[in-house]
Image (cartoon, rainbow, N blue to C red; front, side):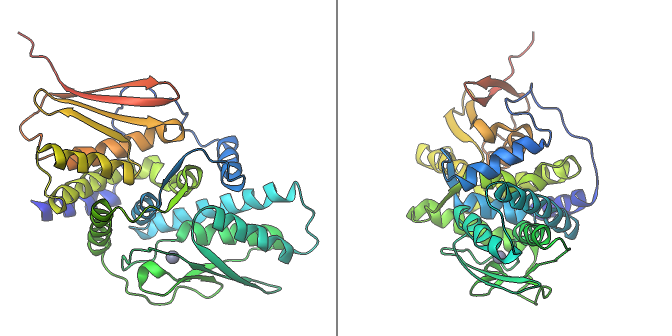
Length: 344
Ligand SMILES: [Zn+2]
């Protein structure tokens, strides 16, 4: 059964499908508006973000965005665009004479984004940036394509010349630190996607048990780095994968209908920033999933529902008449899952 799901997820990634209908429109418009990304960047720079998410949520979304070469390429391009915007944003208040002067601002941004301690060297034609990240789970694959694109876009704009920077080494792929340089990716563990997923699950389950993984990052950065996941062409495949991962989580956590166990599921969705889950009861079914502000973006809600579908699939087995009702709440979006009334 599980093998079948894996195959389904992999096949689905290669195909383009139409997007399933969601109940009504969430609060935040999902179209990519420059003003929206501008506001997200300012939220990270100003460090006045009111909302923070657990760093594991970013690991999860970065890993999902690294599953295929085409997604990694898209992540890089998206990061490049955001890096260019970031440079232009800084330049409004500072007048850089040499591009080298801008790099300390780039480094401050990466630190404000919660990526860890940053060390760097600047050369006339390129930069070398290293991230020392605490508590980094080892996944066997490199996951910082968005950051590589962001650095490339920032440096290219400053130099007025295309400057490609790659993540030559990634701590998630088995190195001591993440290293961004001009040289292309060096061989790392390069494990399978299944291995990366299972390692991430182990780490999150451990975090739920010991409660130690409490590093926070700004929600604004999470939303910027997760944009590739929200693209229409990947939505169908990603929903399958999110559902598969949800199911794997249920196995790893030995999820049952027991109250303690259900509370574990509630804490997990919050940890991964996949909505605030409240399981009122399974019989009769009464479940709520709530999203605040920026997180109530339609595609994010869809991905979270797919994950929940997998997470609870065995507990809700045999229930084919589940109805999801979505509604805007104050500054957010709320989905209720209930059983449809039998029509006589
Ligand atoms: Zn890395």
